[in-house]
Image (tube, rainbow, N blue to C red):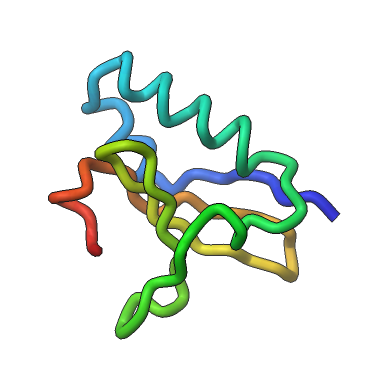
Length: 88
């Protein structure tokens, strides 16, 4: 059972605003580690509080916030940004 990646409109918009070099670094991480993986929780950290349904993946100074849908085997990338701008 392998998971696949989907992006929200917000995440796509955020990626378009970022530097191309950073975007290629983030996309490479997603394709290497998350796309087709069997356990996406092994690479991230679950959030708490009102964001307890989301997972955080740290890529250098950047973060991906994602929601893991086990019923559909999908990882939905909700937000992407610099770690100072994304929820800790």
